[in-house]
Structures are given as C-alpha cells and as structure tokens.
Image (cartoon, rainbow, N blue to C red):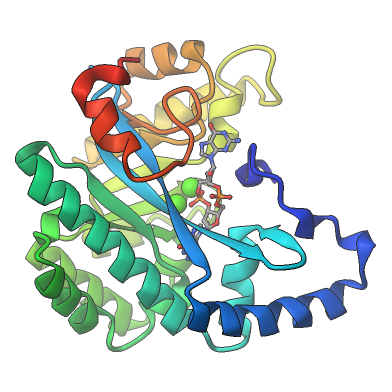
Length: 284
Ligand code: C2E
Ligand code: CA
Ligand code: CA
C-alpha cells in the first residue's frame, strides 16, 4: 500500500504466519499496549505551497509490537475497531495530539501549526464525541481553530443525523473538518452541501500521476485540476498528499493547490520538526 510509504511494516508480510493467528496475537498486544502507553505519534508537516511555510501537521499513529515489530496504522485501527478499543485509542490520539498542538500554540502563538487528526467512522458515530473533544480542548488550552479532523468520504456519507450534528457543533466552535483521500471513495458529493467541510485532501495516488515516471495516468492531472476547481468553487481549501518530488510541488503550486504534504517537504517525524521548519531550516 502506498500509505505504508518508507516505513517497513513487518506485519504486511502475512505469509510468515497464519494471518488469523497473527491478528489475534496483535489484538491481545493492542490491549496491553494501551495500558502500557506503547503507542507513539508522528507529525507530518502540511505546508502552504505559495511559500513553503508549515501551517499544520497531520498526526499519525505508530505502534511497535514487542515481537512482530512495527504494525501498519491501518491494521492497528482496524483491530481496535474489531475488538472495541477504538474509542479508547481514538481518544488517546486526540488528547495527545491536542496536547502537542497546545505546546506549539504556547511557544509560537499565531504562527503555531494546527494539528490534523484522523477520525475513524466509528469514532464519528460515538455520541460523546463533540462534548469529549470540546472538553479536551478546554483542558489542554487549545483554541478550537488549531484542531482539524480528517474524515474519509465513507465516514461522512450516510443519513445518520448524529455525526452531522457533532460536526456542526464542533465546526461552530471553530474546529476544521477535512475530507481525507477525496475522490477515492464514492462519487456522491451531496454531503459537501450538508456538512461543515473546510478542506479536501487529495490522495497521494492521484499526485503520483501528475508527472512522468510514476505509476499514474494522464487522467490524474485532470482529476487533480477538477478537485482543485471544485474545492475553490465551494470556498474550500485543498491539500495534496504524498508529494514526493519538486516537479509535483511546482506543478501543484501552478495549478493553484493551496497546501501540500509529503516526503518532498518532510516525512512524519518528532514534534520538533515543525518549530525547526518555522525558523527557516525547511525552505522548500
Ligand atoms: P492517511 O490518513 O492517508 O495518511 C497519509 C499516509 O501517507 C501516512 O501513512 C503517511 O506516512 C504517508 N505519506 C506521507 N507522505 C508520503 C509521501 O510523500 N509518499 C508516500 N508514499 N506516503 C506518504 P501512515 O502513517 O502509514 O498511515 C496510514 C493510514 O493509517 C493513514 O492514511 C490513516 O488512514 C491511518 N491512520 C494513521 N494514524 C491514524 C489515527 O490516529 N487514527 C485513524 N483513525 N487512522 C490513522
Ligand atoms: Ca489522513
Ligand atoms: Ca489521506
């Protein structure tokens, strides 16, 4: 999977073990990991394409199993949903992410990057989500505008009123809502009218095809251009994900894409990559 990127996740190598046995071992490990605080978070800068200044950071979960090594976050999240731990794990990510953002905010003020936290569909349907989150923001001293939530199209689709109300309440306080991997889910766009979305994130798979020598097709450039036009027409901002080369960054900038994220700018790293980029060591 593209998302696995440069990190090597041993667990993808499923023929080493019976996949099901492995899953149950990992599920057990997940439970104790939560108790032992074995998870960590990485932060990947999101830059403004016009000048390369980091304006935000996506929060990415990391878990290293004591025997099996690094586990892909999709797998940890999947397992956590399966065994009913997603609520706890999701809250842990949100709290830690907000604590980090509050530190940046205290140190950097107006220049502080926002944090962008991934929410699973299950978390969005949790009735306590909005209250929980607003309390957390309050406790850690983070203005709501310094938090962005990333939701996939499939999480946002569906007629349920609960999630819509939760997002409405959060947005009313200033929390930003972004659509993750826009264009890879369903072609139903009605939710864009109904929900307080602020930003579309274009999946790295489409960015690959922008320039020669990658796996994409000429259609990708048209798709990216259309997403940018759609977003701007709706007064939303656009972030391109998985930007790996200077050519991609240049092209996206010339196409009017607002923000970008990817290895060309910075890999997911320790929280201090953000302040270091801000004092000018970034500069791409
Ligand atoms: P995502 O939300 O689409 O996150 C972007 C993924 O692309 C990350 O993979 C990131 O490390 C990777 N990436 C960043 N720049 C580049 C690049 O230039 N090239 C390539 N090839 N890849 C790049 P990661 O960290 O392995 O996360 C995978 C997925 O796991 C995420 O995809 C997200 O769906 C999920 N995930 C991660 N952390 C969390 C979390 O705390 N909660 C939830 N619900 N899901 C999470
Ligand atoms: Ca994401
Ligand atoms: Ca994404």
